[in-house]
Length: 252
Image 1: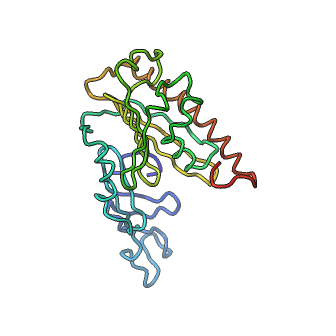
Image 2: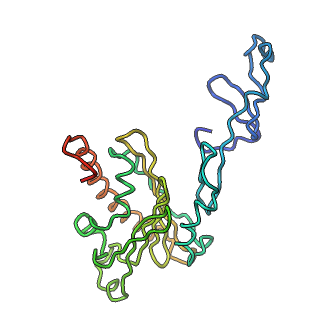
Image 3: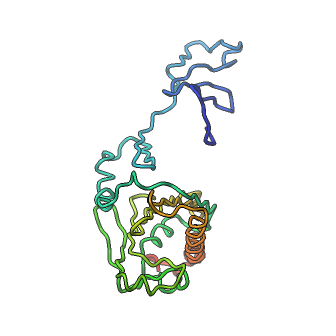
């Protein structure tokens, strides 16, 4: 299951060909005891199953609790539900998946960048039209972010092809990111740490079921987000380089 596939009713380890059922129970360990079906003395299949990991699905997104010690999922997701109370997520369909590959920066810098509007007027001059003065902080438990509400006049006066709608930029600890772009778009991206200085990032674009989902429309919005992310990546990689300096203290 290293790649998406139909594994039917068995999972097979490619290294030693051990076979597990979909409950994680070890069903076979061929040649482990010499013969094809022989097992070492006192080796019991039921003692060597896969470790159970708690998973919960929220809309299209899978949340994983590796050590089983986290608070309940409902308490974890509650702040995000609060922020999305005026959206029926069932009305939103994934229309594009953008893989950005590896970015040479720590994942926390990307997280901070997403919810920090201070840089927008300087870094995204040609891709966004969301004045800094109109932004405000969103703080709901462990859901942190920022938001901007634009008037219809501001949106009408914006440059064609820029991000110029009322938006919510939300993060859910540790690395789940969700953006709401009123009235008909949601963007989710995941920052997956590879090392202390490398992060793999992907973004999925969701559109309302009644919005324009033509190939042209999806390609247009995808190009915009690719440009926005590339601008952010360039800055975050420079921030990471700055962290190598002894003078770097408390961010800065």
